[in-house]
Image 1: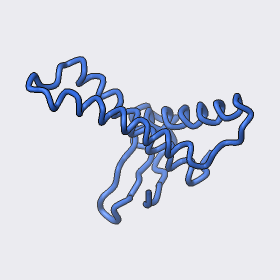
Image 2 (image 1 turned 45 degrees about the vertical axis):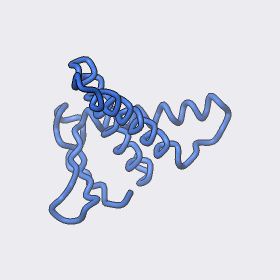
Image 3 (image 1 turned 30 degrees about the vertical axis):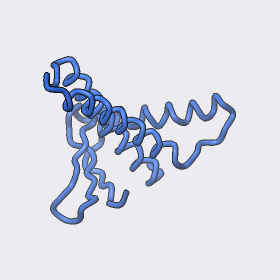
Length: 119
């Protein structure tokens, strides 16, 4: 994944503040992340590092990418199963899909943070 990760504001100021901007498509087009997504992304990275330590392994550089791929597949499974049916998307599945979507955004950010080696 290409693009620059630009820090806007520290997340300590206000929860919900736009903290990071990622511009994978060039000028004028970017993805803006919220402080809560940054916190979730850093928690994901911490969990990936902890899991590697618990297994007495070194942290694999592609662990964040594999985590993002797994979450993206979860979202595809949720949406694919219900969109194909004639009944449509039940509210419970919509809420589940929204939760997975938020996890996916955080996973994308975690991958970018890991790639930049940000603390």
